[in-house]
Length: 491
Ligand SMILES: [Zn+2]
Image (cartoon, rainbow, N blue to C red; front, side):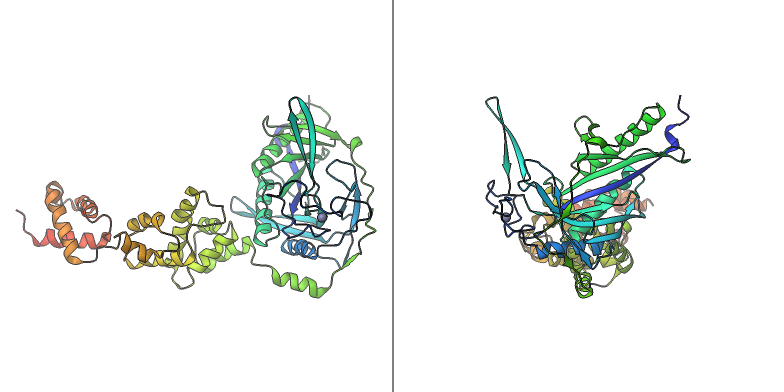
């Protein structure tokens, strides 16, 4: 019988992320790096096919993008770095080695900030280095015959590995760390971060230890997690498995386990004894790289404002509610549209109203049209025009909501309001007529109002609104009704 209970343990998690670097060409040759829509084995050349005698050339843009990532993650960029061969044999790796980095990576000693339930947390970044992606194997079955095909379009696509310190203490933290990292990569145009397409992949190391220091478990690596949700679920499962194993008196081993999403479990793939020995050595076909202060400066200058800083500025500079600022800064293009929309206004009301329209109605419309998360169906100019119309009372909020989905491409809401006859009823005669008609139709409400139940005016306002097709401003409606009710003596 073990002396431990589940609550006596804490969890230690570190994440390793592989992200494809957004460049036009591959890492060591001039082939296009985009392979999504290409026929298999059409974006290839002697270098990325690993043919004997072919020589690699370094992709400068990829190196700079990794440095930009490191700078965004507050890393140090050392003066010198080198590339190394990582040797292993697999059918999707034609050269028999990957050109990666071993002991002198591009970026070291950084940190990332992320939030968990509104609280800012920090975790260390050990290193960011450059390497290259492998090809892809396609397994087919034809009339009972199994075959494996290889597509080398992905072979040699620039890949960066972002290794985090084991500073995370829960599956939730791990998830938020990944969400924040992916957002930074997207903000600085370093990677699409697309997990479904394999452009952003995560492996996790997790171990448990007794909080009183009497037990420290071995590190278990988890692979095959293809979504943020899968990462959180796999870590939660593994945390529980390891704690229960220690309580039951079973041995834990240092091993690699794969996440099986459909079953919600991790299964052992290989133990420490079966670990690869990659026999790294310096890549003889490429020079060492030297970084100068002016290069580091230029990279710092090229960085946009990062997501968390922008979120904080949205709450202070524009006075937006925290939750609206969070939603607006999830994707950089949305944050840009918000700032472009409020360029011509300067009141806190206008800022809040614009944020509110984007976060609720406009993003809702984008979702209903299945637009990508970083796209809106209307432009900043259209949003500014719409918010202005509502703000001045030229269009009621209700009419604006009706108008929004009926906007034609590039059409200004003020033009659409005329086309759709949705301009607010401002003509006193029209409104007075509608109010008088409402009073005729709702004698009971009139009697209640005159009998002292002033709230009965709500029913009359509703009726008047209906008669004007929602185009009248509530305060004008109320005033018109009161004017008639107070002037006309009871019948
Ligand atoms: Zn190539």
